[in-house]
Amino acid sequence: MTRGLSHRHRNFSPLRDKTLVNVLRQLFAADFGYENKMIFAEIMIKRILDAVDAFVKPASMIRPGQMLWMAVPDDGRKYAHRPMKDTPQVPVVLTVVADEDLEGLADGEDFETIRRRRHARLVNQAHEQGAALAQTDLSAVTLMSETSVGQDLRRTQTEEERLLPTRGVVHDLGPTVSHKVAVIHLFEAGYLEPEIAERLSPVHSLRSVERYVQTYKNVLKLSKRGFSPDSIASILAIGHRLVAAYVDLVQEYHPTALVANPHLHAQAHALSPSTTQVPYDPK
Image (cartoon, rainbow, N blue to C red; front, side):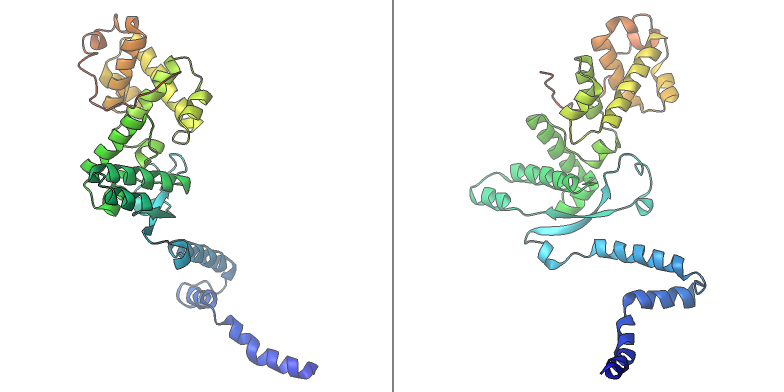
């Protein structure tokens, strides 16, 4: 009996090695010179297969109306300014057509309202899965122009008095400054940074709130010292639009700070950026 099991073991056990892992092991050994470094090859193979698994989801995980999309992880600003090919990606399941969309269509709801709701839903779904969608992602998924996507997001934020966790907001990218302005309004209303982060959660982390507040304080200090907007932008390595937004806030909350600054006193109104600010309620 033991001999029979041993015989079958010798004959059939090798079949268990007919795996993709071993195919890749042979590839690394024969074509890439890893025959004497298989421990490293096996580590890389595992990482490669994990990445492949991330791109492939069982059909049972995707419901009708949903799609799989690769998004940038919401890991702070670690990869904020890197090319997409050098940026990690995570899979997210997005509901492109939801029951509420179909119900709205059937009830005669206007297409623009349904579209705005969809854009907000996609952004929030990605954020709930640890990722962030850019406006270009939404444009590609919904086949709407970036301009239309941006208008939809801004209108939703204005009407619902909340920030949407797009990549531009959570990674502090792009020309928008409205979320930074909202942080400073709350700061000037007497809220501490942890309280502000909690009020704007889950869009902003405490670290990002602290960064906005510190930058604002630096603009205020440099404004009092008589520096020009160009100089402030250069010293702090921030954009001119953000300098203009912070100068407006300085003028609003600390008007005397600009009186002795010939560069800013006369230009304070002219520097005002044309951005749609998110309403806030410090109460």
